[in-house]
Image 1 (cartoon, one colour):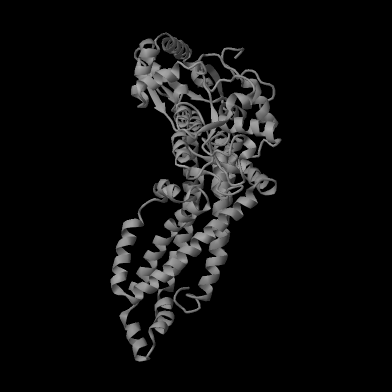
Image 2: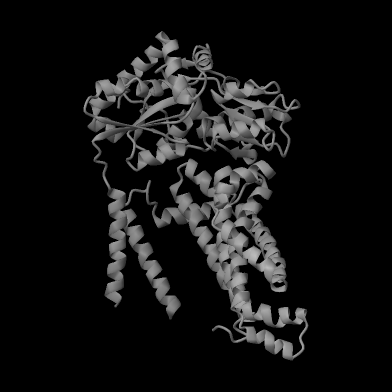
Length: 315
Length: 254
């Protein structure tokens, strides 16, 4: 009786170990992005088959995920090879020991804290019960808000108790319905859509908070994938470059493709992607500043000096 | 003796778990070791927001259960009084009970925002229907002859309810509260994980969510363990106490 019970326990544990050791033997390349204009080159790459052309015979899986945490978890589980996210969630993952590196920058876009309340013109105008919606704690929006709070109000954690987590579309609806939230920290196209409302105004921009330009989205690849499939990774990088080039050279065509993918009018998309403050580039900017701020706030503590977080630089 | 055996099994599991983590077979990113979890729990309790978060969660659950309980008493009373009303309530329970609270969340946010009120509504939705269903089954399970006996003694309706209906259906009502308690937790945690802190530091669901976004896997497990721990304590002391004073005293269960 007793040995039987122990056997069952042992069996359960070996199953757990098996599950956790499950290696990733996919014959396909899995890529995840999120939703928004900042990811436009990825959409172009997918819709125009730019990557598929270079990787004939390789099955490419494109996934659109609702938030960074989900992408990160899928990458830990070995379900994804390449994921797109902002720099702060990437740093948190690296800090916690994820074996991954930044493969490429993707875009710089304007981000801002928007309010419809006429009385709220700067951060100090938010009252005790005024709540601010943003995608999640630890997100780039949260870090920018904290940076600005530190600068303007002397306390980086000033708004931490008044954050509501909402996806960008939910946050936009909540803001515009004036039901519940006083501010929404968001990015394009939601930012532009919100600002079309007559009462909407920007309380804080990402640039003001950061004090310098920064990359909004970076592409990150797992070390194991990079080691095992260097050719796929190189092809991906080239394809991304081509997609960015295509968007710069043919904004008309790009707008048509994106319009279909996002369900937004072509004309509007054209206006958006040709704005001067939206830049698609493979450069990465702002790593240092995010790293230093997050370290000073204790969000990361194991990374030490930066370096070796970007692929191709001594890795 | 039985408790000891259970403890031994639990310790054995923990030992295996720790050994697995120690040997490197379990990836700490996927399965944090028990010592990591214990450390995380101790740290959050000592210097973190966790004590405040526990109180916050308990407060919301307490309020939600209180409202559900009062609603159930009033509805149950009306059901005993009016058979037609009872049929209606039964239909409503069947219709609404299966709806997940999270599915109602978008509507609730529109109605009352994302504050405490929204979470309490979701808790009441989670707790009230199973409670009501148990109350109805309890009432339905009382042998008709009990009421006949009551009639013979010349009991008034009020006396019938307090001396026959409630005691006779007490095991069902207590079971209903146990289910309601568990459902209230599920509702609370899901609501908090979806829209974040409703109060100052939020509750345990928010703590788990924050652990998730900051990739503190040990923190997630610690949060889950904490919920179980609170469950055991409440089961043992609150429900145990009530059962001893009621159904056990009356000789209905052992």
